[in-house]
Amino acid sequence: MTRAISAENFAALTDRRLVARDFIWFVVKDLVTDNPVTDGYWSDVGNISADVIDPDTGSVATRTFYGAGGLISISDVPLVSNLTVQHVTVTLSQVSDRINDLVRGYECKQGRVQIFRGLFDPATRAQVAPAFPRFAGTIDEAPITTPKEGGSGDVTLTCTGNTQELTRSNPDTRSDASQKVRDASDDFLRHTATVADWQLFWGKDPGTIGSKSGGSGGSSLASRALAGAGAVLGRV
Image 1 (tube, rainbow, N blue to C red):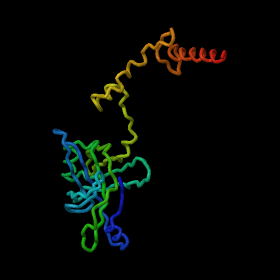
Image 2 (cartoon, rainbow, N blue to C red; image 1 turned 180 degrees about the vertical axis):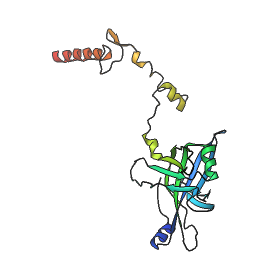
Image 3 (spheres, rainbow, N blue to C red; image 1 turned 45 degrees about the vertical axis):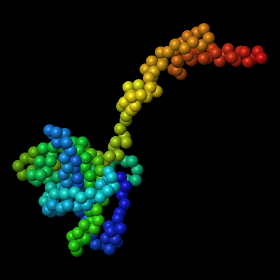
Image 4 (cartoon, rainbow, N blue to C red; image 1 turned 120 degrees about the vertical axis):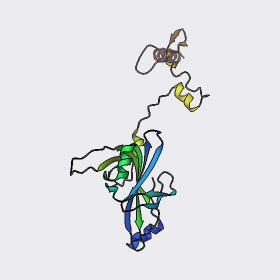
């Protein structure tokens, strides 16, 4: 995800005339149809249609964000210049009916989350430029707790950055079946499962293809062949 500040935002920062607001965008799953469902919140009151820079495409998108206390806080977003996995905690208000509908009515775990920072002119309250992305990842944990009377019942989401995907191992193996998934006519790995058992004839001794770890197969045959060749050379 590339971050670049626009000329408008840079001018506002230089003149020290800005008000920062956070935006958060969720893509969760419908429990019945498995279809994606989107929802957004921002750190101010009322609802707003704001422009944001989509971290996936880099293009500007207009999205609707809801306020009125739904979004309580976002932990510090670690800024790194390497492939370190970022972790962010988002706190939402369980008092909000919309938040309750989001976390109880949809599957939030493994849902997508995007966090943006928008800058506003304090004189006009207008957005200076599209909000720039600060974080993009998935929701790892979305616990729902029912507090005791008088207690705090905020919803805390634990989110992990998309860099996490680079740490996953590939369970696929080199096999004919795997190769056929890529291209049904590709026979490059057709004999992978059986080639180790093939009988090779070197002179009068048959054997299988050997390896460094031992066995009396092709390795011993090759050794005897090389020794014989050395003896012949020695007599020349």
